[in-house]
Every structure is written in structure tokens, then in C-alpha cells.
Amino acid sequence: MKIGVLALQGDFAEHLAMLKKIGADAVEVRLPEHLDGLNGLIIPGGESTTIGKLSVHYHLIEPLREFGKSRAIWGTCAGMIFLSNDAGRDQPLLGLMDVQVKRNAFGRQLDSFETDLQIDELSEATKDDAPYHAVFIRAPIIESVGAEVKVLAALADGRIVAARQGRLLATSFHPELTDDSRFHKYFLSLAA
Ligand code: GLN
Image (cartoon, helix red, strand yellow):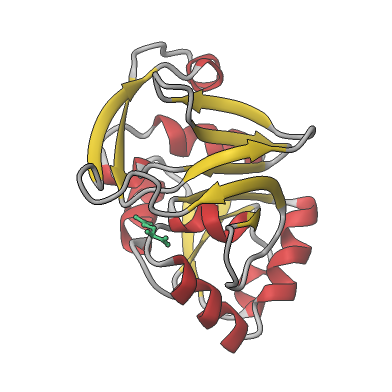
């Protein structure tokens, strides 16, 4: 299984390390030709405006859209914003997932926090139903989803923090910053 990580900005190194830990062939993607031969792609957390602008600069927008039509893409945090079709403001987006997101949804007082989530699809895919410890850093939330999108996880107050549309996966939080490799294994199953 060969998985790329978009390595323009943000915490791509942590995703690469986690992928290697679980035995995937993990490569950095910086140019369109780096997408050749990949089974899936992760877009990391960071700053979605910067990731978007750099993707425009390196002519990656259309190749990434093409890639996402037939292969798996997972966006974490800023990556989730970049995958969406509506971030409520003008910035470059891939528009692959039919989700409306809100950036920095937790405001200043609670801009970073951790919480346990019960994520049934993750438990089923990994045969492990321990709660999932999620790390949020100036995180976005998903405000609404289209008909093709399945909600995977929400906070106790109902705000959506993980969703899937076919092979496209979006999480508000950062599985690459924990020791729990279940989300990366689950993504490999989507990419297979
Ligand atoms: N606040 C960032 C944004 O809006 C996302 C933060 C993150 O990826 N940890 O792009």
C-alpha cells in the first residue's frame, strides 16, 4: 500500500511517521507527478489558507481533484477544510467533499483541547472498540453535510467532527499526534 502525504506545509512529518509505523509505503507529495502510483493521500493539519495557496502555486489543484475522484483522500484539520466545498470564506478549496465547515470553531478560550469519542465505524474496521482519544488544535467543525456524506463522529453537543464520503475522509482532530494508529489503519482500508 503506497500512501502520499501532501508535504507543502503543516504536520506532514507526523503522518509519514505513523504510516511507516503501521507498515505502509509513505511518500511526500509536493508536485503533481508525485501522485502517480499512490493508493491514497493524506492532507495534514496546518494552515488551510497556506496549503491552498501553495497548491495553486505548484499546480496541484486539478491533479488533486482528479485523484480524489477515484482514490482515497483523508484531510485532518486544515486538510479537512481544504477538502470541503464551503469554508464560509474565500480561499482555495478542492471542493471534493460535500461538507460545509467552520474554521477555528472553538474560539480563543477553548482553542485546543482533547476528548474521547466513540466512533463506531473505526471500532468495526479495527476490531477495537476502545474510546478514541481525539486532539483538537484550533480546529474546524463540520456545520452541515450533503446527502452522500456519512457522519462518523460528533461531540457531546452534536457538533460534527468526522465524516466520510465514499473514500474521502475528514477529521477535525489530529490522529497523527497520538500513539493510536487505528485511524491510519482505517484509512488504509479505505484506500485498499
Ligand atoms: N485553524 C487552521 C485553519 O483554519 C487549522 C488548524 C489545524 O490544522 N490544526 O486552517
